[in-house]
Amino acid sequence: MRNTKQKQIINSVIEQLFHFTSDDLISKVSEIDSTIGRATIFRYLNELIEQKKLQKVHLDKKVVYDNCTHDHNHFVCEKCGKIIDLVKTQPISNPIGLVINRSSVTYYGLCDDCQK
Image (cartoon, rainbow, N blue to C red; front, side):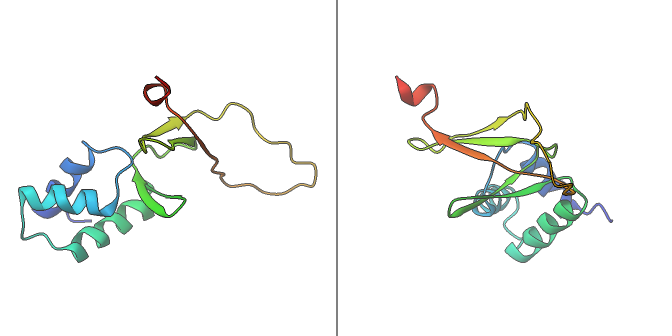
């Protein structure tokens, strides 16, 4: 994979974002270099996902990209929309011998700030 100036700019933005949408990324990248097109950004996002350097997470009606690539769960605040990574604490029991490659659980509720 060639490390072009465009990819360097996109990477520098991704390093500053957590649980971001493609629109978030496109907006931030265009502030730095407006010549980088949407198609370039989407192609590069897909490359990063294939290389397992980024996860695509489906939360209700929204897709976010997560640069935390280890297996984990999420909490979404229903009031402010904050997304918090949660450590998986207990594996599920598997009495019928399924091969589970990964799992994803999303919890919804109110974050600490919104409970006040």
